Length: 114
Image 1: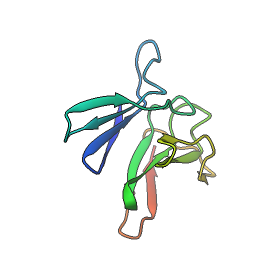
Image 2: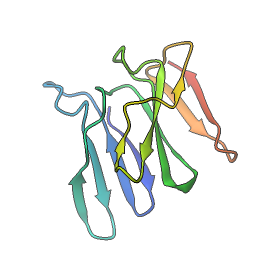
Image 3: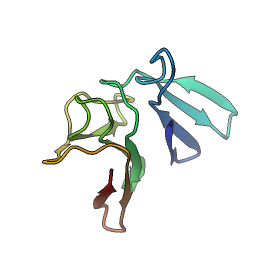
Image 4: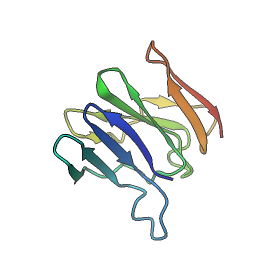
C-alpha cells in the first residue's frame, strides 16, 4: 500500500510494496497546479505498512512500517533539504505497522492498531 498526504497544492507519496522493492524508498510529489510529478530524494529506509500525516506548516511525518528499521520511529520531512531525514524525531516503545495515525488540532500525533 502506498501512503500519500496533501502538502499545499500537491500530494506527497512515500514508500509502498512492489515485487522488486523498487517503491519502498521512493518519494514523489504530484503538483496539481503545474500538473507535474517529480521524484524527490529517497527515503532513508525501506517503507511500507507505515502511516503518514501532515502537521502544521505543511510538515510531513512518517511513522512505523513493516521493515524492522522503521517500526519504532517517526521521521519528519525537512522542507529546507527537501527530504525525510535519517535521524528520527520520535521513538516508540512498541513497534507499529499496519496501523492508523492522525493528528489533532494541537499537532499531536496519535497511533492506533497494527
